[in-house]
Image 1 (cartoon, rainbow, N blue to C red):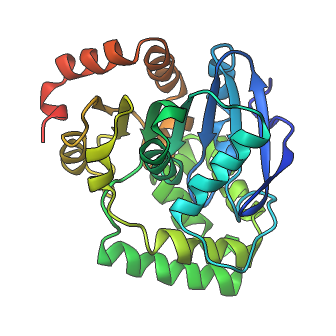
Image 2: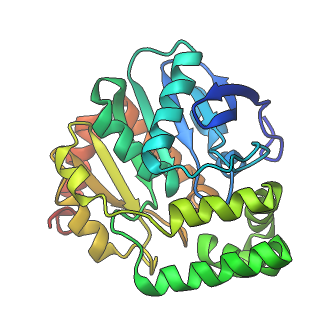
Length: 291
């Protein structure tokens, strides 16, 4: 499959409306839910390395991609319900491996907590567990208003810089284009509403980590100002069965596009041997996995 050719998606009816869902590969099921602001095309460099291990279920979240937006507010918990609806519609009743990026990681944490019998493992890439800071909230609110008034091109540069790091546009223009195009693909008012309802009201999920029974990997990068290694280390300390992994790549989405081979190796090893992978990362980086 070409890195630039997305798999064919089909509409699946959920409580949050019809969502575009693509399935590729074979084997036990794994759910992939992308970051806010983008869509499932950001998995393009990773899925060719994973679809031999699992039947990948790629969900375009509500108000993202080509999905028709709703005018009724929704929450992260509603997104969990929509994921359950997708699995039910696809007749997937057994446990899945959840792979989430940023927003997808947040949904995954809540999915694993609410439906432990349906979540075999959880990998949350670049998904800050703490709530938005006041400064981040002010910046996002300002940029979202600019986006609503002038369209995606007005904020494309700072968005790509935030999700992939400031060097991405020069060093990886194709990756930067994947992010910018995914952002531009969404209906403008719908994306603005999703930012208001989800990003600006992102809750602190630390107490949810305390309840997780699912083997879990949290990841961040060495220089992510919105999900520092210190904050990620503190969050990992709340996991009963889990570890923190420091991945290459800048920004929340960067690892998927800038370090796909390393991410694929991590994820496949975790899927094959969850407990062994967690133990190995705790032993290799003990200071990264203590609160």
